[in-house]
Image (cartoon, rainbow, N blue to C red; front, side, top):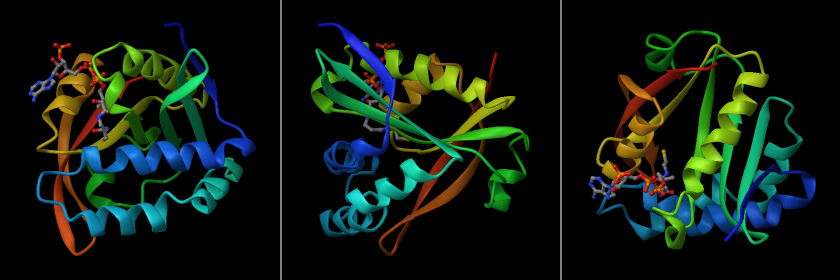
Length: 176
Ligand SMILES: CC(C)(COP(=O)(O)OP(=O)(O)OC[C@H]1O[C@@H](n2cnc3c(N)ncnc32)[C@H](O)[C@@H]1OP(=O)(O)O)[C@@H](O)C(=O)NCCC(=O)NCCS
């Protein structure tokens, strides 16, 4: 199946919300309450939230599709790092890879690598020196993937879903 990537535009809010609603829970550790996942999606990954992200000049959103069907998305966020714990371990000219999700039916199929290549090219085009992300410490599949993509663990942070604080690794890699 031909894989294609492209920048998302203002007409993509619904499809991004659909992808996010299907995939956000996959990145949470076992035991995370479904109600907490749903509340997080409703608050941060709704259609309206994506309308705002797409209108924000500091963000770049991309999709990966198979034969024209969207199967994954990513979101880069520029600007000052607001979390002091992250700012202490990440270069100030770093750009955040805030979202990186592929539909589970497409894991292990090369779609994530395709999306990462396009995402890192967009990240480099912003003038950033490096790219950083936070990923749950129990998410071994993502850890392996990010390590393959050159992201090294540089620190830890905490990330809240519902009332529960989760332990993330902060990973970073240089950009070309
Ligand atoms: C993270 C994600 C984008 C990676 O895409 P992918 O297609 O699964 O990645 P790949 O298959 O190329 O790489 C995953 C690696 O983990 C390995 N792996 C899979 N399950 C594993 C497990 N339970 N323990 C250890 N390694 C595991 C795979 O074998 C593969 O390694 P290999 O290429 O050396 O064999 C995708 O899994 C995803 O969307 N996950 C859900 C959302 C998510 O967690 N996003 C990250 C949020 S920060």
